[in-house]
Length: 260
Image 1 (cartoon, rainbow, N blue to C red):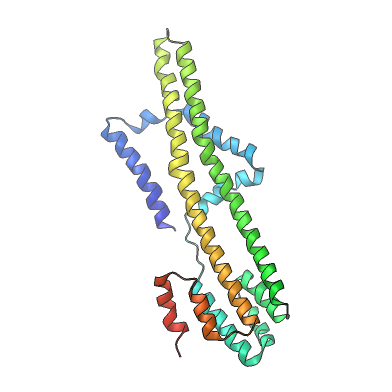
Image 2 (cartoon, rainbow, N blue to C red; image 1 turned 90 degrees about the vertical axis):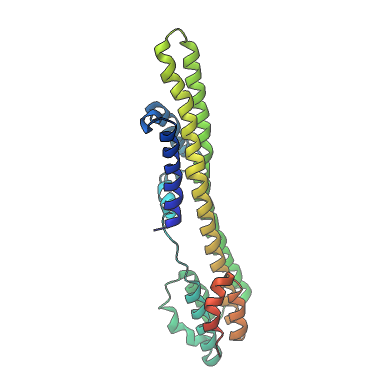
């Protein structure tokens, strides 16, 4: 479970409730069914117009990813690549074939399979970079749907505000309708702001960092695979792979992979 996501969302909503209580109100004061349907349900349904049916339904699965901690195992990948490099230099590239079946990383397995098959390095790079670009494209599509909901939420909120104001102005003589219409006019804006600023924009930003991290790991794997294919020295390969890590992680892994 991603504690940061829980802390962020939980903390934001806690601050909202604190503001409500300290201002003398109650949560029921800000609960309005017409505003909810207009802004929350309406903006989500508008997402179906923007995207395909599977992508709109899959939006909830995309949001669910932010509550998980992705595990890339950079250290394990570096150790594995260095082991492949050592074995390839000692026994030849064909000796790596029996090692590939134990790989759980399909991207790394595909690249190493191309190496074992004797594929040219330029072709390996092109194929792996193509796959990486397709992964990024799929991630970008999912992020686009989430960002669109964040864009539509405030828009539907403003639309609800206009509807509420029109209804209020057309019934000024009916004083009993002023309160409900004003509530719709203001609460829809509140709901739209919550959708955008507390949910969609922060969660999309988190998923973007996940995508960047995964892309960096795959770029590291591409460099490692090509280095093995070209017979590069293992120590040079280790230095190259460690450059992809942040300084703290690098120090943790460096002592093990660069030991004599």
